Image (cartoon, rainbow, N blue to C red):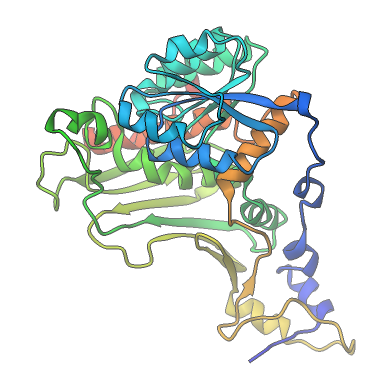
Length: 400
């Protein structure tokens, strides 16, 4: 059933407008062909599933060439080299890769505990950096990396790729224009049903391959999954959390892991806004989802789509008639929801294109060291709350 309502009443209600839903980023959508001398030579440090995935993605980005790869596991490095440039070099020591003067930039896709050290070394080697999320494992590392980037002339982009999603950009613009009213709360989840383990060819490689399971290397589910959604909430609110309280545990997978198999945290943001983040590994119902609840409407965000559900009081206002015929708002589906336009088919690819654009035009990435630091600090606060079983507050020294 298609529903249309009077445009003038719709505008009067303060709800979504057609312009708000279809506002685009057309100026960013298509890049001109890149001349040969504009090619950016990339070195990839860490060729596990994520690193190799990014290498394969760069095969379709003309101005990015994978000129070097590095990994301490030979079988991973060998596989990744099949997707790199034919003349690409391979390294087992990332510091040797950084000595290559022909490289313009590096992608760091390694265990979280290595991020800060490798990023600093790369900046000191005069390389631009694409640093996978979460930016750093510890708060002091985030603050140190901010200063390092601010004192360099190099680009550092953090791999919170939803910043590059055209769908997410439209969602954020729509919210900031006030089309869902005053934000009251966020409800985010990223649930799976599986042990989260990777196959291990030799027992001695367990900690190296399944590093996400061990606190020495990882901040667990909060850093590896929820950090994307925490970054999104920081983006929408334009702020950092003021306080967090959380719980979690190793309650289902009794397999020797040290990081939690379930996490539940609540962030307090300014103006009374609350944001909840849940991550399970034993139930995948509704999987990935973010709800943004406003007093006029709710946006429900799925991996590749978003729908807006106006509140009943707004729907009543939309039914008003003022004598203007033929004016409509976007078509609602059978549930009375309005789609948000925008593509989210390839956020990683778009993030890499944005990285190239930032390097070429010497401009700060939209997912930069400051947004990355706020997300990393937020994750560390949440983990501390879970571990210490008490609320944790943001400190003035965290402001970046």
